[in-house]
View 1 (cartoon, each protein chain N blue to C red):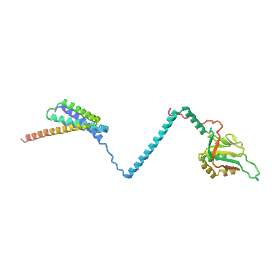
View 2 (cartoon, chains in turn blue, red; view 1 turned 180 degrees about the vertical axis):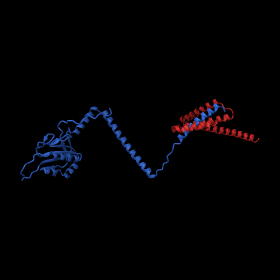
View 3 (tube, each protein chain N blue to C red; view 1 turned 135 degrees about the horizontal axis):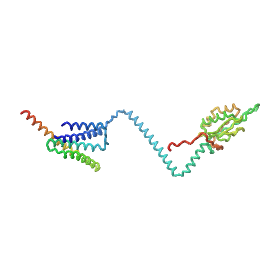
View 4 (cartoon, chains in turn yellow, cyan; view 1 turned 90 degrees about the horizontal axis):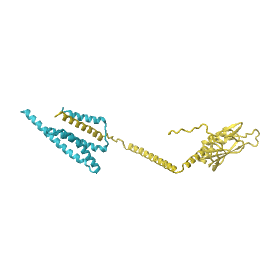
Length: 237
Length: 120
C-alpha cells in the first residue's frame, strides 16, 4: 500500500467520522422523560390555559387599540386635537359640569336667645377638612358658593375672612355642590360622617340634600397659572 | 502506517462531537445517505485494494460523486414526493454487504494460506 493511498483512506475516513458524529448528534437529541403525575400535568395545563387566556386578552386589547388608531387616523387630526383639548379642559375644571350629585347648604345656626358676637364666615380649616372628606368620599367636581374648586384652588383666611380663590365667603347661606360617580354612596357617607357636628361647633348648620340627578357646577373662571410644571422631554426623540 | 485511516476515523468522530454541530432534522436524511455513500466508497476501496485493482482516481472521485449523487437523489425524491432515497439506501446497502463479504473471503483465504504455510 503506497503512502498516498494511506492518506486517501485516512482523509476519507476522517470525513466519514465527522459526518457520523454530526449525524449521531442530530438524531440523538437527549429526549427528556416526562415524569409528571396527573396533578402536575393538570396544574401545568391550567397554567398554560391561563397564559392562553391572557394572550388572547392582550391580542384583543391591541387589536382594539389598532382599530382605534386607524379610526382616528381616518378622522381629522384637528378634531382629535380639539377633543384632547376639551378633555384636558374638563380635567382642569374649565368647563361646566353637569351630573348626579349632592348639594350641601351651610347656614348660620344661633339660638333665638343667643347674645354675643356672631361669626359671619366659616373657618378655612373647616372648609379644607370638608374638601378632604368630600374627596375621600369620591367627589369628582366641587364648587363652593359657585366657585369651582380646581387643583390650584386655595382656601385661606385673609384678615379674618375665609376666601376661596380670593372670593370671600361672607353671605350665608351658601351652597356646596358636589358631583360624584355614585351620588347615593357619597350621600350615605356624608350622612355617616361627623361633618355636621364639626360645622355645629362653629355654629353652622350643614344640611345635606338628597342625591340629585342634575347638579350643575360652573367652570373655573380664573386663569390657570402654570408655574411648577415643565413639558416632559420626549424620550423617543 | 495501516492504522492511519482508523486514526482518521477517530479524529473525525472527535471533531464532530467536539464542534457540537447539529443540522436541522429535515436534512438528517441527506446526511445519513451521504454517510452511507461514503461508507460504501470506503469499503469498496478496501476491497479493490485487496484485489489489487485499486485506483486512487476512481476512489477519490467515487467518494465525492457517490455522496453528491445520493444526496441529490434524496433531494429529488423529496420534491417528487417519492422516497427516492430508499433507492440509494438499497443500492448502497447491497453493495456494502457484497463488498464486506468479498473482503471477508479474501482475508479468510489469506489467513488460511498463511496458516498452511506456517504448518508446512
